[in-house]
Every structure is written in C-alpha cells, then in structure tokens.
Length: 207
Image (cartoon, rainbow, N blue to C red; front, side, top):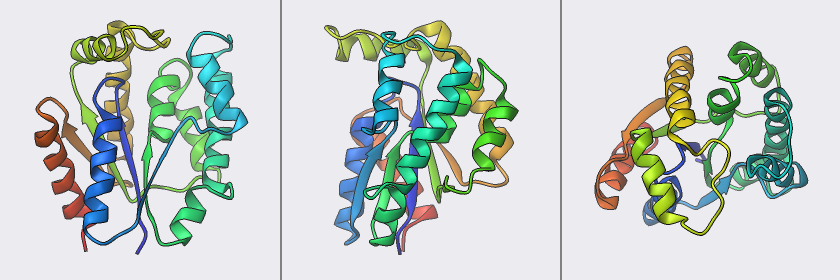
C-alpha cells in the first residue's frame, strides 16, 4: 500500500542525506520508494529557486502563492505525487506545505497561508511528517561548511532560522490533532539520526 511521507526541517539539518537513507531502508523492506522535492523542477519551481537565491525580487505574499501553485503541479503532474502513489510507490518529499507555513507564514499571515492550502482539493495531506530538529546556529555552521563556494539563500542565517524554527513549532501545534507529525533529533551521527527515522517509520507506516 502506497504512503506519502514528508521530511521537513531547517536548512542544514541533513534532510537530503537522511531522505536518501530512508528511501533505501524502505526499499530493503521490499517496497518501492521514490524521492521528490520542493520547489519542483517545473517552471514555477524554477522561478521560486531564483527568488530564494535573491536573483528575483518579490513579496512574501506572492512567494507563498507561488509555492501553492508549484505544489499543485507537484501533486498533479504526469510524474507527480498522485501518479507515483497510484503506481504503488511510497513517496518521500523533501519539504511540503509546512515549509510554506513556517518560512512565508511568519512574514505574512499564517492563517491565510494555511487556509489557502487546506481549501485546495489538489493538495494531498501526507500520511507522516518527520521534522528534523537542530539549533539554528549549528544549521548555519553546517550550511557554510558544506557549501563554502555557493551563495547562501535569503533565509540561511541564524536570525531568520531562529524565527522559522519557532514558526514550525506554532504550525505543528495547530496541526497536531489532524496530522501525524514526529520530531526527530537531527543532532548526532548519520547512523543515529537514520535509526530515529527508521523507528518513526516502523511505528506509523511499517507493515
């Protein structure tokens, strides 16, 4: 039976690495797993990446709406989430609407951002959300260490990540009764963090 899993967290928490390991773990259980991410590679997603890099200027309100547009495509495209699920795959997404609520929601109006998404019938609710937690200061250290020659995105500083971390907590408190959200301590070795994800997967999804 196909499942939709979202992995969230501040930039620098090791999401990309952990998602790859989780996908391999699921495959080792005899299930087909597919990794996807937001922003997507579709035109709206490419525009969002240009905005996040600082190349294109816009408002937080417009950016939140762009993320919803990209998310609809992410769900409904020929190679999108719904198609993968219908093919029997377990889909793991690197970010989803929780990031919009946290990143753009703290700059606009959280209730507006949430209402906009939850009133859209083409945005699927995940079966499980795994939220990687880490101190913002350590996230920034990791970002700079891992990408010394690359430009830092507009939110990748301690002040912004601290505000966004608090916003994630606010978002998850609002959603705790309607969604399966598990906090995962991302501070530790790769193997230690992976095991925490495996345990959460087995508890909520494992068959």
